[in-house]
Image (cartoon, rainbow, N blue to C red; front, side, top):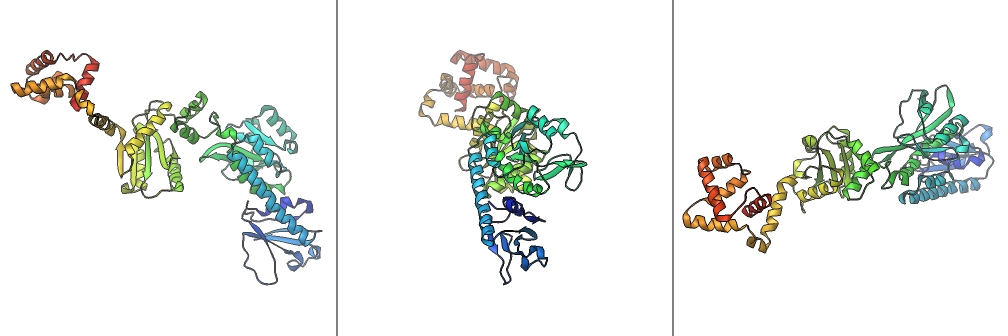
Length: 480
């Protein structure tokens, strides 16, 4: 785990260090020493040495200095070797903490299990909420700076309007109306003692909750700002946000679940449906770049699509970008893709309409079918390929030629012997949807002539044009 100066200072609290932090970058991966020779200082390291070599003030004569860029930590009353060992212990402590958190989050442990690990390193209160402000977990609540605030949260497990209805300002005094994607310090106007370091929790680029750390004193603020991003990442992977039955999981995760044909609970399905808010039929499409094959590119395209007006939701799945959109916005999505990637490098497969969420898996299979085993540049629609595919499979089955409707053989033989066109008439009539006037026009014959031919066809073959199954049988046989 890369450390910042505030993390190191927090670990060295027993020395009551004098801390001067300007830029608290979390870039430190080791410790080096000041020497009498000029050094090429790197922000990858914190440098240790005697403060007397850098400060003329007699107060620092016996102090030791830790420096990182313009940041400084001064420790009094300790030996050089002792401080070095403690700094090295800080690296070991935070590395072990990160490993424990990584393991817990990778296993999607309950949020409270993850917070129980966090509380070993963080003495200030930590609260985690879902996106609706429902309290999901906390630690060190006994250290809350305000008993009144604490009472409301623990009793109701909800960050209600009473808690956030006051004027909130950031560290510069500017009024804040929302949290951000990075840690920010906010406090109640005219009461800097009641403040928190807060940020959103993200899953698949989607806000699923937020985390709040409450510094106990002013010196804790930089520490909270430095560590909160790491904590947020692990908390967002907790069971509460990732379980297949959780309505707090991201819509992208739900979409992947549906694409894999996994069952979703009615509550999860309802959440996903409400997010889509479609006014017309949905349709699914798969985009695949034939040149650029990397996760970052696909994620960037997904993000740009969702931020545009072109698509409702999309995700990276099985090395492809899968997009769920309204059928009447399909052209907007295609235009969006084509404006960014040359058509010669783009393969797109498009499903048939997706009437319900449970058909999302079927829609995905239709897209894969349209894309083909070896994707080629261009746009391919499942609806244009499905019928030829089915017929080709029938043609390739040897027995199929022996199972054609008997009328085909009867009319073919009769036409050859009598020099008539009854088979062509049957084909045209069926293709026209059994509309006599349209069929007569296509054959360029009088309507009475068509009617005579149809009567003759019925006499020879006993076809019942009113029987749906028989009519379908005839259609398939003619298509063969």
